[in-house]
Length: 155
Image (tube, rainbow, N blue to C red; front, top):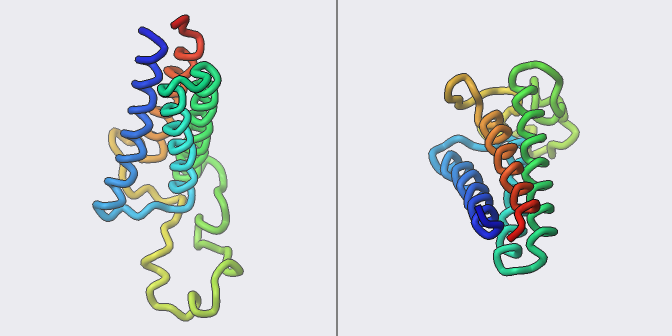
């Protein structure tokens, strides 16, 4: 496969994953903080992919996109581990959400806060026993492989 096709495929893969995240959100699955962290590297990979497709140092931008894919994959694996209880997550979005110092007085008095805080250690959706964070980790790792194939492609 040519470098251009590999870059196009990987870029579309990130568009699909990021679009899927927004689609789940539209269907009522509000993202937690760690879910939001995973979106930024997808956006970066898309921008690097567009630059590469436009001919801006394709090998370099593909490598940067591959690093972005590895970043979101790493965050996804970490998040999936937090969901499974393998290791602790950020105190601001796990357990009881113990970081009360981040809340204002109005937040503490609000009766709506319980509906707006999404805990990072709760699995809200899964397919084949893999959570959204786990799927992001696996699919992003596959996309990283495609990006690095594009870097190594001759043309």
